[in-house]
Length: 199
Image 1 (cartoon, rainbow, N blue to C red):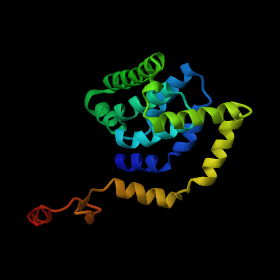
Image 2 (tube, rainbow, N blue to C red):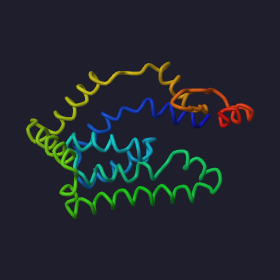
Image 3 (cartoon, one colour):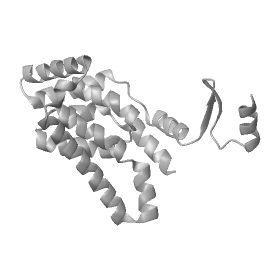
Image 4 (cartoon, helix red, strand yellow):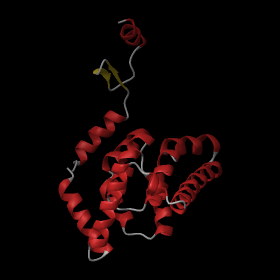
């Protein structure tokens, strides 16, 4: 049931809105918010990379995006629930605080050493273009609001029923063999697994 709610949160989260919110923050608050968003977003390291690139193309400073990128896979909501039930709230709180501290300090350090000079050329160009857009706008608030409106208009909206179906699928095991779905919706029986493996 918990995995269902996590999948529902994942389907409901508007990454563009998070990106737009972070774009208007100063560095100190930005590190903390980037790390905080990384802690509450249910992304693994693979899905955090495209979000990182989206933040970079929005002109958000690299240190803030790195705070997000470091914290996002480090603090996992499933791990939090397991730690809370197995080791208690004190250990879980320590896990979250250390994870967020790593994100904040990592972002600050990477900004301090001017990390953007080591970005790949496509990411450096996206960052430069995004920063030019932010400077060219009348104000950061105006830019953030217009980006939110544009993002809301461009990104397809999922209905609650669609988010529910997504969460239901994500919370039940599925078996894919040779790029074909062979089972979903429940735990497969041992006989089925043996049959699949013998093919």
